[in-house]
Length: 149
Image (cartoon, rainbow, N blue to C red; front, side):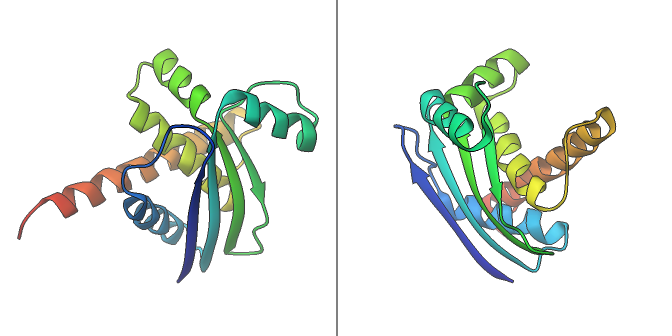
């Protein structure tokens, strides 16, 4: 599978090991039969994401993620903007570690590109289930890499 994943940072937040996230996102995409993947994740603060929300979606609300999906069939392509501020606050509200909430949000954007929606109760439940499956893949990958055979 042809894979390109880039990360841009407009805050002090930086992923510690970008390649680890690329490997994980690739496994998630393959699990849902993607044939290629070209993603750009932009990490920013609430104000910057709100600007995008107003400019492109005409929504005057804070959000944790906006996915600009250009996927065609199973060729995944998107620009995904994430508010690190919102992810931190959501983690506190949901009583989960920041890292887990970040994985959920990152997978959420990818899953939208793979056809998952989140408008109805059924769609939300399906999305949450898929997010959990992706989060589990991250942990399986980390355990595999941390064991010596």
